[in-house]
Image 1 (tube, rainbow, N blue to C red):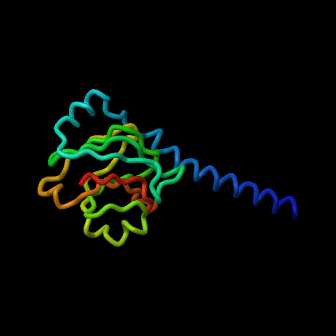
Image 2: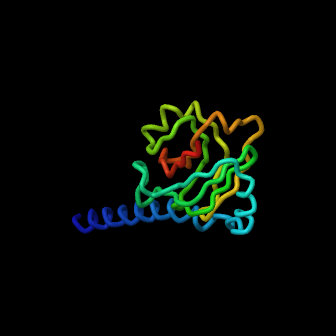
Image 3: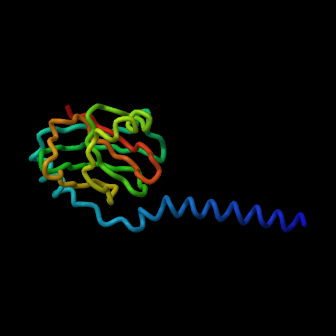
Length: 156
């Protein structure tokens, strides 16, 4: 009986660890190629604003972080840098600077979803028609599935 319980516990632990590792590594394995550096640099030249993602924000930790330059124009958001890999990343424009999920959740309804992030070494996202970047002052990367803050950069 003790052997059965020990096997059950050990197999359950392995199953849980394997599932957690799968959640972490699946986005990395299925990610499309990141945009080329030259393309990111060319698209960033038209930016009206620039800002920086950095790792030392209150909501960032060793699994949830972003770093690098973010360029914002009325047509496009360009990120030249790196994001911690993860599932279901979304980019929002936010009306005030926040650096933790407990600050973002109350104003999420006042923020605008720009698009999905599928690459972790830079991204390009078109700003949807009708979105005025002047209404907002911060670009935020959010993990929708787990409700986790990844990074934010205040551009105004």
